[in-house]
Amino acid sequence: MADTVQTTAAEKDIAQTTGAATHNGVNPAVVHRGYDPRNPMANIHADDQARLPAFGGEFQPGLYRSVEARKFANPAPLGLSAFALTTFVLSAVNMNARDLTAPNIAVPLAFGYGGLVQLLAGMWEMAVGNTFGATALSSYGGFWIAYAILLTPNWNIVGPGGPYIPLDDQGNPVSNMADSALGLFLTGWFIFTTILLLCTLRSTVMFFMLFFTLDLAFLMLACGHYAKDNGVADVAKRLTQAGGGFGMLAAFLAWYNAFAGIADSSNSFFLIPVFHFPWSEKGREARLAKTNSHTAAA
Image (spheres, helix red, strand yellow):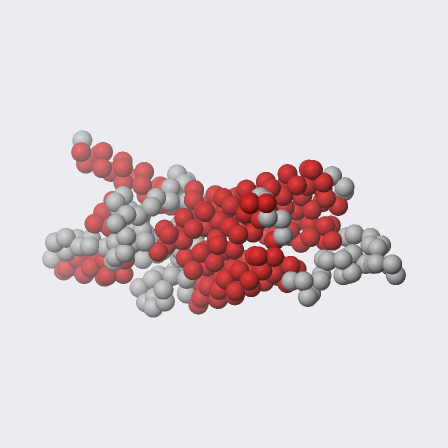
C-alpha cells in the first residue's frame, strides 16, 4: 500500500513537471516506459527522471539535466527564429531573388536580430545548463555580428582600398585577396558546423537536417569564393546560388524547430512531428512501447 502511494505521488510530481494530464492519479506520459505517442513534447525518460526531449525545439540533441526546478523559459526558439530570419534574407540575396546582388540588406538583421538576440539566447541556454545550445546559438550569434562587420562599408575590410584589395597611386587594384579571405572565413564555419552536425546524429531528423543543410550552405559559399578567386565567374555564381538554396532550407528548418519548441497544448491546436531517429533514445522507447502494446494486446 505504501509503495502504491509513493508511486502515485511520484507520477503526480512528474505530471506537474511536464504539464501532462493525469487520469485517476496516473500520468499517461509515463505509460510504456515514459513514451507518450500522442505528445511529441513529452519529456519523461525511461527511468522516470525528468529530462528534456531530444529535438530542435529545445536545441539539445542529448540528455538534459532535470527540469523539476527549472524557472526559465526555453530560449532556443528565440535563437532559432533569429537565425532563421537573418539566414532567409541573406540566402534570398545569394539566390539573386528579384535580381538582388548586394547582401548589405542583411547587415541590420545580422547586427540586431541574428547577432545580438541570438547571442543573448545562447547566454540563456548557458544559464539553464544546455551546453550544446549555448555553444551553437552563441557561436552563430557571433558569426552574424562578424559577418555584418565584414559587410559594413565604413569598415571596408574586403572592399577596394582595404587590406585585401590594395590600390596603387592611380586607384587601380594591385591585388585581390578578398575572395580567398572570405573563403577561409566560411570554411572555418563549415568545419565548426560539421562538429555540431556530428552531435545531432542521435537526435531527430528535423534537428539533423537543420545542421546538414547549413553545413552544405557554408561549403557551397566558401567554394563559390574560391572559384571566384580562381577566375571561374560562372561556377562561382552557381555555387553561391546553391549556397543560397541550402541556406534557405536551413532557415525554414530553423523556423520548423522553433515552432516545435513554442507550440504546446496551451497555444496550439496541433504539435508538429520531429521524427526521432530509430537509434535515438526516444526512437528506442517508441519501439519498446509498440512492442509492449502488441504483447499486451496478444
